[in-house]
Length: 417
Image (cartoon, rainbow, N blue to C red; front, top):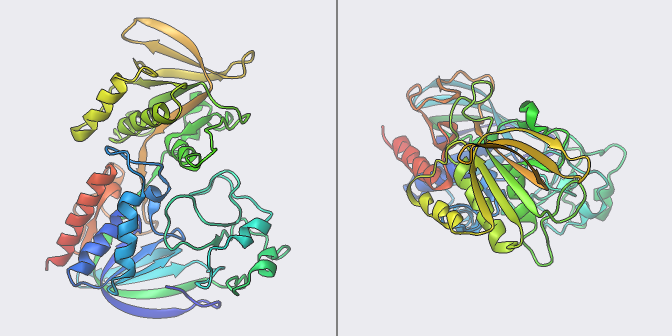
């Protein structure tokens, strides 16, 4: 749904509101709509799909995001009971089950639905986005995120766009899709039930000072590494070190980077071990000459993910080392990174060089600011006031398959009176 250049104010009456348009929110929306309920999905980013849309692949089948998202996007397009607003955030929730009033703010839509995703606006845009959601090297202020996002059209990041002094995109757009004078808007919803599917973001790795994430470009988070892998899967693309553009030969994966630590996140984030096993196997498949070493406290893989561990254990290019990495420092002679670690099984302390380090940062729930909701260990509690139903990773850490199942259960709860 679009709002006009001047912004707007209107009220909709809908049975179910879903806050969050990632794979969990999409799943709940489709299940409800196909059961006969009208739903509205709101998503703070310009696209549905959430974190999963930018993945390279996900376990246990190692399939790309298209496996789960493509068919769901088609189901959304073909079902008139599903409405959605992107660039939308909750401002206020009041009322009781059966009669909630929700105020939603809408970001200014600087590119409208006439966009054909031709890409000319990005070609002439002089400003790059850095350290932004879905951002990758070379992403401009006018951008489409990599991966499988929906709707597939360009947007402009208003925080970095220099529209007052630039406006080059206006000159090249042939479809009158650019509206740089657009204003924010606001809508009001009357809803009977609310599903919280706000998802997650990675823990701030810069707070783990001994790992030097902020000042070492070759130290990346697991989500950033996922994006790097996704951006180099095309023909003639290679995984390269951010610092010098050269292919890495040795990559270290550090588990529990901030998780299970009273100074950071006291809980286990559940999926990090399986994600690192997946990354190492992806490297072994695409770059068999690369060496990977996974440093862990405990490997926590359950259910079908045990097969990932079995594959890793039988892959010669991957090593598993039980031991906590104490620090990372720059090798002033070789230009790489030196990891200081106590190898528990060998009973020795090691200082080994690596070209890249991937930090398995934990999952932190996305919370709605200013809205009082029941919390448990920093996540939304499973039990809220009647009519508000938390789902998936805002409730506890989960992998994609578990999130989809939990979102389906949330949809079923929303159908009940």
